[in-house]
Amino acid sequence: MTIGVLYSRIRHDEKLLLNELRDRDHDVVKLDVRNLRFDVETPEPPLSECDLVVDRCLATSRSIYASRFIDSYGIPIVNGPETAAVCADKAKNSLALAAAGVPTPRTEVAFTKESALEIIESFGYPCVLKPVVGSWGRLMAKIDSRSAAEAILEHKATLGHYEHKVFYIQEFVAKPDRDVRVLATDGEPIAGMVRSSDHWLTNAAKGAETATFEPDERARELVAAASDAVGGGLLGIDLMETADGDYTVHEVNHTVEFKALAETTDVDVPARVVDWLEQQRTAEVVA
Amino acid sequence: MAECIECGATVQLHDDVENGEIIDCGTCGSELEIIETEPVSLDTAPELEEDWGE
Image (cartoon, rainbow over all chains, first blue to last red):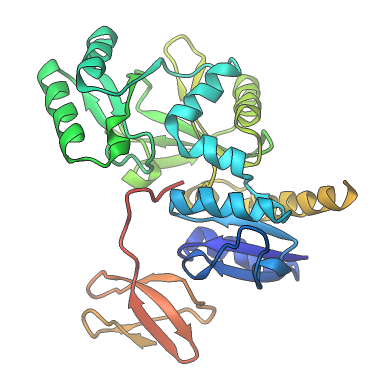
């Protein structure tokens, strides 16, 4: 099978994937997104030679457009453009989770500083202000007071890209200094980990410590439901444990990193991912 | 081995290094991108952009 790996940079994650694909004698075509051109009708080589493409773009904007073009050519892509579009935008992500009945933190969106401040005051302090597009905990603000809220909103409205004027406000979940990441394929967990930190942000990219996490029945149920809510695929589902012993799903990631997970678990993560990729191609052929 | 384009130090490379791979200079900490493998050519890695992530 000829598998295209669409990438921005070859990080350890992509290296793990490339090595696993090559070990299984797949023909791997590296697709540097910086060098590609997308015709509205016909794919150019080497993209046209691919039986399946795996989107590993770091840049969300490129991921969204590239996956849309590749899908339009009839080339199967993981993840599909619909999933990418939903997962890339926190507002769309929250809407999808809520529509599917998946427990997710209380969230509201507003477009002016005044309306955003009203939401923040109604949520109470602390609460969280997030960019609608972004990752790795960047530009996230835990707001502890009205004066802080006013300053952050003023900065975002004045200094930011227009997307920063979409104020995405979320309740602060008093999680136990950790959150949960589950890597799943079409809702079936491959492996999970907890990410612990003294900081309120528990992203692995922020230096959180990781440990293996075995999803219990409830976590598995929510992982499956969250995956379905965004259209399925190879996903990183982020959950927080709540005070009442349940979980809340705050985010689903569509170009999920798995280096930290692979170092945490005994599961052969790249092998399981490639197992699933091979099934995708098989499913396409049968269909 | 290759030479860091930022500080000139020698950078150790794995045998299976490939185009597009990001490596760190052990001396100055710069992120470097492999542009060519035969012979090895390095450039500074792309800067982090706002929409990068998962």
